[in-house]
Image 1 (tube, helix red, strand yellow):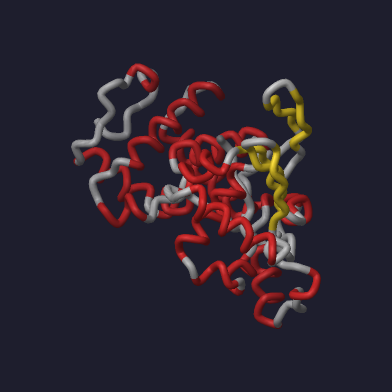
Image 2: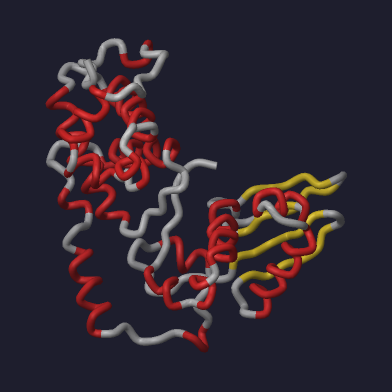
Length: 257
């Protein structure tokens, strides 16, 4: 499943943050539930599976979590008891609903996550309000003039396809970094049309994912690609991680040659 999800900083205050395994499972749920309404056929019956919901068996969830169906059932019960999710058995499948999904995913600066129930909401601290103002300054207005916002989103999608484990915290910042990367990329690779630019960036992302330097490989992000552009280009040029199939980037002025 492609695309991204939005994670609010208040997640760090929730009990699930302190359990690495359960945190990973929770993020997996957010990535697996629908981002739009769908219909699911189970046996001879069609079920509505809305945005923020999923219909899968415990066995399927167990494979995603790398655990047992019994452990999944226990985890779901834990989340249900804390009003984080709602579940309903449908034959051999489970209809799972993430509570408050729309409130969480609709706004980049949404204050509450689905993990925050009415009884647990807190007023933002002075520090949080200050951070919120600072990040608002990094919203898409920093995208270089003349670039289509939808194309910027396509670049972010390509990056997330290559780096599916990367979690976006501030979408405005990511869009700004994608715009800056595009500006540098077009300067170094003139004459490419939109499709060729996107394809060549995808190739670049794939090279970056396999970069020889461990630190760069572990911390790779759009921001790092912009701020360390020359260093990364040098590593890619000197490294042994060139793609064997360079046909998709034949018209690009190869950075590594």
